[in-house]
Length: 175
Image 1 (tube, rainbow, N blue to C red):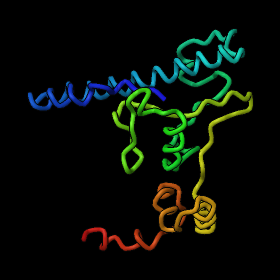
Image 2 (image 1 turned 90 degrees about the horizontal axis):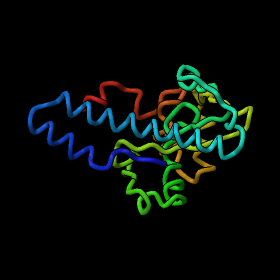
Image 3 (image 1 turned 60 degrees about the vertical axis):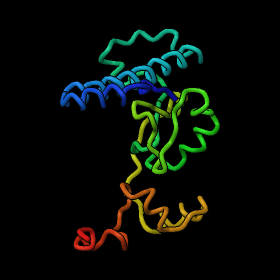
Image 4 (image 1 turned 30 degrees about the vertical axis):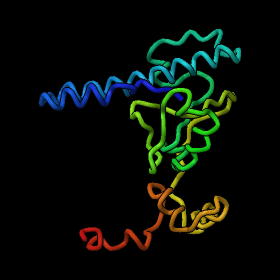
């Protein structure tokens, strides 16, 4: 878990107060890119520490394509769509105490320019996407997680392969 966001919101607010939206957006983008770059650097350090990255001679294009051994999946991405497992990771790593990163009630990280994920080193590890899931899978997930079916649907919304009772009537969304 890394952050490059400490102070970014304050800088962005100062730009916004000066009606300088371009630099406000640029500051946030720079924070995001720095956090991602540092997470990638830590992955390189881990590959070297584990021994199999010592002989890597990857050019920038190969790095972008992630042509190295191992993966770095993160909550919210296709292989791990449920963000609700972040609190366990944050507790284990003592993220707020150690680097000042906390979670909102909807599992967003604060400050925003922060990255959390997992490193897997196995030579056969690869990225994958969880396809659309059925109602039975959502019910089973909720049961195993100890949450209601409705809560499981909320957490897994982007990967549901069916319409829920709360999202079937577009007119009800208007209010």
